[in-house]
Image (cartoon, rainbow, N blue to C red):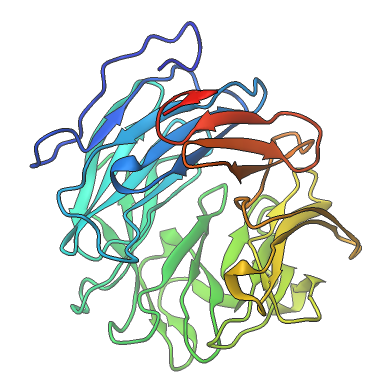
Length: 376
Protein backbone atom coordinates (compact mmCIF):
# COMPACT_ATOMS: atom_id res chain seq x y z
CA UNK A 1 0.00 0.00 0.00
CA UNK A 2 1.37 3.40 -0.94
CA UNK A 3 0.69 6.49 1.11
CA UNK A 4 1.40 8.84 -1.78
CA UNK A 5 0.71 8.07 -5.41
CA UNK A 6 4.38 8.68 -6.13
CA UNK A 7 5.65 6.30 -3.44
CA UNK A 8 7.05 2.98 -4.59
CA UNK A 9 5.91 0.06 -2.43
CA UNK A 10 8.30 -2.76 -1.61
CA UNK A 11 7.38 -6.34 -0.81
CA UNK A 12 6.43 -7.15 2.80
CA UNK A 13 9.51 -7.57 4.99
CA UNK A 14 9.36 -10.45 7.48
CA UNK A 15 11.03 -9.93 10.83
CA UNK A 16 13.73 -12.37 12.00
CA UNK A 17 11.91 -15.13 13.84
CA UNK A 18 12.20 -18.83 14.41
CA UNK A 19 8.54 -19.54 13.66
CA UNK A 20 7.05 -20.42 10.26
CA UNK A 21 5.62 -17.42 8.43
CA UNK A 22 6.27 -13.72 8.98
CA UNK A 23 5.68 -12.24 12.40
CA UNK A 24 5.60 -8.66 11.07
CA UNK A 25 4.98 -7.45 7.51
CA UNK A 26 5.78 -3.88 6.52
CA UNK A 27 4.95 -1.67 3.56
CA UNK A 28 6.92 1.39 2.50
CA UNK A 29 4.83 4.57 2.56
CA UNK A 30 7.33 7.07 1.12
CA UNK A 31 7.92 10.49 2.68
CA UNK A 32 6.25 11.06 6.06
CA UNK A 33 3.68 13.87 5.83
CA UNK A 34 4.39 17.07 7.81
CA UNK A 35 1.31 16.58 10.00
CA UNK A 36 0.87 12.95 10.92
CA UNK A 37 -0.38 10.60 13.60
CA UNK A 38 0.37 6.90 14.06
CA UNK A 39 -2.10 4.62 15.81
CA UNK A 40 -2.65 0.89 16.22
CA UNK A 41 -5.65 -1.43 16.02
CA UNK A 42 -6.12 -5.02 17.14
CA UNK A 43 -3.82 -7.36 19.03
CA UNK A 44 -1.80 -10.46 18.31
CA UNK A 45 -2.21 -11.64 14.73
CA UNK A 46 -4.70 -8.80 14.15
CA UNK A 47 -2.33 -6.03 15.28
CA UNK A 48 -1.70 -3.25 12.75
CA UNK A 49 0.00 0.15 12.77
CA UNK A 50 -1.57 2.86 10.60
CA UNK A 51 -0.40 6.33 9.54
CA UNK A 52 -2.88 9.22 9.31
CA UNK A 53 -2.16 12.37 7.27
CA UNK A 54 -3.93 15.18 9.13
CA UNK A 55 -3.86 17.58 6.17
CA UNK A 56 -5.12 15.29 3.45
CA UNK A 57 -7.58 13.31 5.60
CA UNK A 58 -7.10 10.37 3.24
CA UNK A 59 -7.52 6.73 4.25
CA UNK A 60 -4.73 5.93 6.74
CA UNK A 61 -1.81 3.97 5.31
CA UNK A 62 -1.11 0.54 6.77
CA UNK A 63 2.52 0.60 7.91
CA UNK A 64 2.72 -2.81 9.60
CA UNK A 65 0.58 -5.92 9.71
CA UNK A 66 1.23 -8.71 12.22
CA UNK A 67 1.17 -12.45 11.89
CA UNK A 68 0.80 -15.12 14.56
CA UNK A 69 3.00 -14.89 17.64
CA UNK A 70 5.02 -18.06 18.41
CA UNK A 71 3.23 -18.36 21.77
CA UNK A 72 -0.24 -16.88 22.32
CA UNK A 73 -0.07 -14.25 25.08
CA UNK A 74 -1.74 -15.10 28.35
CA UNK A 75 -4.89 -13.38 29.63
CA UNK A 76 -4.37 -9.72 30.38
CA UNK A 77 -0.84 -9.63 28.97
CA UNK A 78 -0.23 -6.70 26.58
CA UNK A 79 1.36 -8.16 23.49
CA UNK A 80 2.25 -5.03 21.50
CA UNK A 81 3.38 -1.46 22.07
CA UNK A 82 5.21 1.09 19.94
CA UNK A 83 6.80 4.53 20.20
CA UNK A 84 7.51 7.11 17.47
CA UNK A 85 10.23 9.72 16.93
CA UNK A 86 9.20 13.36 16.56
CA UNK A 87 9.62 13.33 12.78
CA UNK A 88 7.75 10.04 12.37
CA UNK A 89 10.64 8.38 10.55
CA UNK A 90 11.57 5.86 13.26
CA UNK A 91 9.29 3.53 15.21
CA UNK A 92 10.29 1.04 17.87
CA UNK A 93 7.80 -1.80 18.20
CA UNK A 94 7.56 -4.27 21.10
CA UNK A 95 6.01 -7.68 20.65
CA UNK A 96 5.43 -10.05 23.56
CA UNK A 97 6.43 -13.46 22.28
CA UNK A 98 6.34 -15.55 25.47
CA UNK A 99 6.80 -15.26 29.22
CA UNK A 100 10.53 -15.56 28.63
CA UNK A 101 10.89 -13.32 25.61
CA UNK A 102 9.80 -9.96 24.30
CA UNK A 103 11.42 -8.33 21.28
CA UNK A 104 11.96 -4.74 20.16
CA UNK A 105 11.97 -4.06 16.41
CA UNK A 106 13.10 -0.88 14.65
CA UNK A 107 10.77 0.14 11.82
CA UNK A 108 11.45 2.87 9.26
CA UNK A 109 8.10 3.44 7.51
CA UNK A 110 9.49 5.45 4.59
CA UNK A 111 11.36 2.43 3.24
CA UNK A 112 9.62 -0.43 5.05
CA UNK A 113 12.90 -1.44 6.71
CA UNK A 114 12.41 -3.66 9.78
CA UNK A 115 15.10 -5.14 12.00
CA UNK A 116 15.39 -6.72 15.42
CA UNK A 117 16.87 -4.42 18.05
CA UNK A 118 16.79 -6.32 21.36
CA UNK A 119 15.16 -9.37 22.96
CA UNK A 120 14.83 -10.58 26.52
CA UNK A 121 12.55 -11.41 29.42
CA UNK A 122 10.66 -8.85 31.48
CA UNK A 123 10.82 -6.04 28.93
CA UNK A 124 8.34 -3.17 29.18
CA UNK A 125 6.99 -0.82 26.55
CA UNK A 126 9.75 1.24 24.86
CA UNK A 127 9.75 5.05 24.89
CA UNK A 128 11.76 6.59 22.06
CA UNK A 129 13.56 9.95 22.26
CA UNK A 130 12.37 12.80 20.03
CA UNK A 131 15.42 12.48 17.77
CA UNK A 132 14.82 8.74 17.34
CA UNK A 133 18.27 7.77 18.58
CA UNK A 134 17.51 6.16 21.98
CA UNK A 135 14.83 4.24 23.78
CA UNK A 136 14.12 3.95 27.48
CA UNK A 137 12.51 0.81 28.85
CA UNK A 138 11.85 -0.94 32.14
CA UNK A 139 13.13 -4.46 32.70
CA UNK A 140 11.63 -6.55 35.48
CA UNK A 141 13.81 -9.24 37.03
CA UNK A 142 14.52 -10.96 40.33
CA UNK A 143 18.17 -10.26 39.63
CA UNK A 144 19.18 -6.89 41.18
CA UNK A 145 21.78 -6.46 38.43
CA UNK A 146 19.06 -6.63 35.75
CA UNK A 147 15.98 -5.06 37.35
CA UNK A 148 15.67 -1.36 36.55
CA UNK A 149 15.16 1.26 33.87
CA UNK A 150 17.51 1.01 30.89
CA UNK A 151 18.63 3.01 27.85
CA UNK A 152 19.49 1.56 24.45
CA UNK A 153 20.72 3.18 21.23
CA UNK A 154 18.35 2.58 18.31
CA UNK A 155 21.41 2.02 16.12
CA UNK A 156 22.00 -1.13 18.14
CA UNK A 157 25.76 -0.66 18.17
CA UNK A 158 26.12 -0.94 21.97
CA UNK A 159 24.63 -2.91 24.84
CA UNK A 160 21.91 -1.33 27.01
CA UNK A 161 23.02 0.80 29.95
CA UNK A 162 21.06 1.04 33.16
CA UNK A 163 19.86 4.51 34.16
CA UNK A 164 17.85 3.71 37.32
CA UNK A 165 18.31 0.76 39.66
CA UNK A 166 15.68 -0.38 42.13
CA UNK A 167 14.94 -3.15 44.64
CA UNK A 168 13.30 -6.02 42.71
CA UNK A 169 10.90 -6.95 45.53
CA UNK A 170 9.41 -3.47 45.88
CA UNK A 171 5.81 -2.96 44.81
CA UNK A 172 5.91 -0.92 41.59
CA UNK A 173 9.52 -1.82 40.79
CA UNK A 174 11.14 -1.03 38.43
CA UNK A 175 10.40 2.62 37.50
CA UNK A 176 8.57 3.05 34.21
CA UNK A 177 9.57 5.55 31.49
CA UNK A 178 6.91 8.12 30.59
CA UNK A 179 8.32 10.57 28.03
CA UNK A 180 11.53 12.27 26.89
CA UNK A 181 11.86 16.03 26.80
CA UNK A 182 12.09 17.33 23.24
CA UNK A 183 15.80 18.13 23.62
CA UNK A 184 16.60 14.75 25.20
CA UNK A 185 18.04 16.35 28.35
CA UNK A 186 15.41 14.85 30.64
CA UNK A 187 13.45 11.64 30.88
CA UNK A 188 10.21 11.66 32.86
CA UNK A 189 9.63 8.42 34.74
CA UNK A 190 7.17 6.95 37.24
CA UNK A 191 9.13 5.49 40.15
CA UNK A 192 6.44 4.76 42.76
CA UNK A 193 3.32 2.66 43.06
CA UNK A 194 2.60 2.23 46.75
CA UNK A 195 0.79 3.86 49.67
CA UNK A 196 1.36 7.33 48.22
CA UNK A 197 0.12 6.48 44.73
CA UNK A 198 1.95 7.04 41.47
CA UNK A 199 4.49 9.85 41.15
CA UNK A 200 6.41 11.58 38.39
CA UNK A 201 10.17 12.04 38.54
CA UNK A 202 12.74 13.34 36.09
CA UNK A 203 16.21 11.94 35.48
CA UNK A 204 19.17 13.30 33.53
CA UNK A 205 20.32 10.57 31.08
CA UNK A 206 23.81 12.10 30.86
CA UNK A 207 24.50 12.07 34.63
CA UNK A 208 25.05 8.34 35.05
CA UNK A 209 23.17 5.63 36.93
CA UNK A 210 21.01 6.54 39.90
CA UNK A 211 19.33 4.36 42.53
CA UNK A 212 15.77 4.98 43.63
CA UNK A 213 15.36 4.62 47.40
CA UNK A 214 11.66 4.01 48.03
CA UNK A 215 12.12 4.33 51.79
CA UNK A 216 13.24 7.95 51.54
CA UNK A 217 11.55 8.64 48.18
CA UNK A 218 14.78 10.12 46.80
CA UNK A 219 17.37 9.18 44.19
CA UNK A 220 20.92 8.35 45.20
CA UNK A 221 23.66 9.22 42.71
CA UNK A 222 23.20 10.60 39.23
CA UNK A 223 20.85 13.52 38.77
CA UNK A 224 17.17 12.84 39.37
CA UNK A 225 14.33 13.87 41.65
CA UNK A 226 10.62 13.36 42.28
CA UNK A 227 8.41 16.20 41.02
CA UNK A 228 5.08 15.21 42.55
CA UNK A 229 2.01 12.99 42.09
CA UNK A 230 1.13 11.87 38.58
CA UNK A 231 1.15 9.19 35.91
CA UNK A 232 1.30 11.14 32.63
CA UNK A 233 3.30 14.13 31.32
CA UNK A 234 3.36 16.44 28.30
CA UNK A 235 6.66 18.18 27.47
CA UNK A 236 5.27 20.43 24.71
CA UNK A 237 5.77 23.59 26.79
CA UNK A 238 9.32 22.59 27.72
CA UNK A 239 10.84 22.15 31.15
CA UNK A 240 9.48 25.49 32.39
CA UNK A 241 5.88 24.23 32.29
CA UNK A 242 5.81 20.44 32.33
CA UNK A 243 2.14 19.38 32.23
CA UNK A 244 1.38 16.54 34.67
CA UNK A 245 -1.81 14.55 35.19
CA UNK A 246 -2.46 12.85 38.52
CA UNK A 247 -5.43 10.61 39.27
CA UNK A 248 -6.08 9.00 42.63
CA UNK A 249 -6.06 5.21 42.67
CA UNK A 250 -6.81 2.53 45.25
CA UNK A 251 -3.25 3.04 46.47
CA UNK A 252 -3.75 6.72 47.23
CA UNK A 253 -2.62 9.91 45.52
CA UNK A 254 -4.43 13.03 44.38
CA UNK A 255 -6.59 13.85 41.35
CA UNK A 256 -5.56 17.05 39.59
CA UNK A 257 -3.74 18.55 36.60
CA UNK A 258 -0.82 20.89 37.19
CA UNK A 259 2.34 22.38 35.71
CA UNK A 260 5.78 22.58 37.24
CA UNK A 261 9.12 24.13 36.39
CA UNK A 262 11.68 21.30 36.31
CA UNK A 263 14.50 23.62 37.43
CA UNK A 264 12.59 25.61 40.05
CA UNK A 265 11.14 22.64 41.89
CA UNK A 266 7.96 22.26 44.00
CA UNK A 267 7.55 26.00 44.60
CA UNK A 268 6.75 26.44 40.90
CA UNK A 269 3.77 24.07 40.92
CA UNK A 270 0.61 25.59 39.51
CA UNK A 271 -2.68 23.71 39.81
CA UNK A 272 -4.74 24.04 36.63
CA UNK A 273 -7.70 21.81 37.48
CA UNK A 274 -8.85 19.76 40.46
CA UNK A 275 -12.27 18.08 40.17
CA UNK A 276 -14.47 18.16 43.24
CA UNK A 277 -15.91 14.63 42.91
CA UNK A 278 -14.41 11.16 42.71
CA UNK A 279 -13.11 11.33 39.16
CA UNK A 280 -10.65 9.54 36.91
CA UNK A 281 -8.67 11.92 34.70
CA UNK A 282 -7.16 10.95 31.35
CA UNK A 283 -3.73 12.28 30.29
CA UNK A 284 -3.83 16.05 29.66
CA UNK A 285 -2.33 17.18 26.33
CA UNK A 286 -1.27 20.75 25.58
CA UNK A 287 -2.82 22.69 22.72
CA UNK A 288 -0.04 23.92 20.37
CA UNK A 289 -0.69 27.48 21.56
CA UNK A 290 -0.11 26.38 25.19
CA UNK A 291 -3.18 28.34 26.33
CA UNK A 292 -5.41 25.29 26.86
CA UNK A 293 -5.28 21.53 27.08
CA UNK A 294 -7.52 18.54 26.38
CA UNK A 295 -8.31 15.79 28.85
CA UNK A 296 -10.93 13.17 29.63
CA UNK A 297 -12.92 12.70 32.78
CA UNK A 298 -15.22 10.02 34.11
CA UNK A 299 -16.69 9.31 37.54
CA UNK A 300 -15.28 6.46 39.59
CA UNK A 301 -18.82 5.43 40.49
CA UNK A 302 -20.24 3.34 37.67
CA UNK A 303 -16.94 1.76 36.71
CA UNK A 304 -16.06 1.25 33.08
CA UNK A 305 -19.69 1.67 32.02
CA UNK A 306 -19.75 5.30 33.19
CA UNK A 307 -19.58 7.75 30.26
CA UNK A 308 -16.29 9.51 29.55
CA UNK A 309 -16.43 13.27 29.01
CA UNK A 310 -13.92 14.98 26.70
CA UNK A 311 -12.98 18.48 27.82
CA UNK A 312 -10.96 21.41 26.53
CA UNK A 313 -9.84 23.41 29.56
CA UNK A 314 -8.19 26.83 29.59
CA UNK A 315 -5.55 28.20 31.93
CA UNK A 316 -8.07 30.53 33.58
CA UNK A 317 -10.01 27.50 34.84
CA UNK A 318 -12.88 27.60 32.34
CA UNK A 319 -13.64 24.60 30.19
CA UNK A 320 -15.83 23.26 27.39
CA UNK A 321 -17.11 19.70 27.14
CA UNK A 322 -16.73 18.73 23.48
CA UNK A 323 -17.92 15.11 23.59
CA UNK A 324 -19.12 12.33 25.86
CA UNK A 325 -18.76 8.67 24.93
CA UNK A 326 -17.27 5.35 25.95
CA UNK A 327 -16.27 4.64 22.35
CA UNK A 328 -13.56 7.24 21.79
CA UNK A 329 -9.78 6.93 22.17
CA UNK A 330 -7.67 9.47 24.11
CA UNK A 331 -7.65 12.66 22.02
CA UNK A 332 -4.77 14.38 20.23
CA UNK A 333 -4.49 17.86 18.72
CA UNK A 334 -3.77 18.51 15.08
CA UNK A 335 -0.41 20.23 14.59
CA UNK A 336 -2.07 23.64 14.06
CA UNK A 337 -4.52 23.14 16.94
CA UNK A 338 -7.64 23.62 14.82
CA UNK A 339 -8.80 20.03 15.33
CA UNK A 340 -9.02 17.60 18.24
CA UNK A 341 -8.95 14.07 16.89
CA UNK A 342 -10.05 10.79 18.45
CA UNK A 343 -10.49 7.28 17.12
CA UNK A 344 -14.17 6.41 17.04
CA UNK A 345 -15.51 2.91 17.53
CA UNK A 346 -17.52 1.49 14.65
CA UNK A 347 -18.38 -2.19 14.23
CA UNK A 348 -16.09 -5.25 14.14
CA UNK A 349 -14.53 -4.23 10.81
CA UNK A 350 -14.93 -0.44 10.49
CA UNK A 351 -13.45 2.47 12.40
CA UNK A 352 -12.98 6.17 11.88
CA UNK A 353 -10.99 9.15 13.05
CA UNK A 354 -13.31 11.93 14.19
CA UNK A 355 -12.72 15.60 14.97
CA UNK A 356 -14.34 16.39 18.32
CA UNK A 357 -14.43 20.11 17.50
CA UNK A 358 -16.54 19.55 14.37
CA UNK A 359 -14.20 21.48 12.08
CA UNK A 360 -13.69 18.65 9.57
CA UNK A 361 -10.78 16.35 8.90
CA UNK A 362 -12.29 12.98 9.84
CA UNK A 363 -11.77 9.80 7.86
CA UNK A 364 -12.86 6.16 7.88
CA UNK A 365 -10.50 3.17 7.96
CA UNK A 366 -10.67 -0.63 8.12
CA UNK A 367 -9.79 -2.47 11.31
CA UNK A 368 -8.66 -5.70 9.63
CA UNK A 369 -8.34 -5.18 5.89
CA UNK A 370 -9.93 -3.91 2.73
CA UNK A 371 -10.72 -0.33 1.79
CA UNK A 372 -13.70 1.68 3.13
CA UNK A 373 -16.54 1.16 2.63
CA UNK A 374 -15.65 -2.46 1.77
CA UNK A 375 -13.82 -3.57 4.90
CA UNK A 376 -13.21 -7.26 5.54
